Length: 114
Image (cartoon, rainbow, N blue to C red; front, side, top):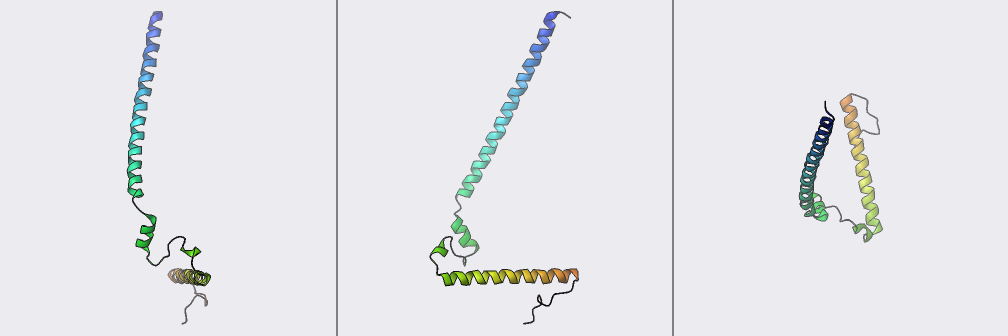
């Protein structure tokens, strides 16, 4: 094989490698642009939603963020105690149901005798 055939082989290999990298770069750029387009569409969709409106729509009885600063300490204490007892009662109810489902004996403190 003559010496110039090796030069042709290496030139062809380098050209194919460059072509591969160019095509890979174009594909990567197109995927990046598609991702950015989807991201901007999602940002526009989420940007139109006001968090206060969402909170008012889901739970109208909840106070707005920051309203505790201007509320009376007695009202805040009452809300804290009410939510604490509601969470405790919900845990007790789930515990009783879980033990009932498993067939385990109930603790006397968990049973509601009222």
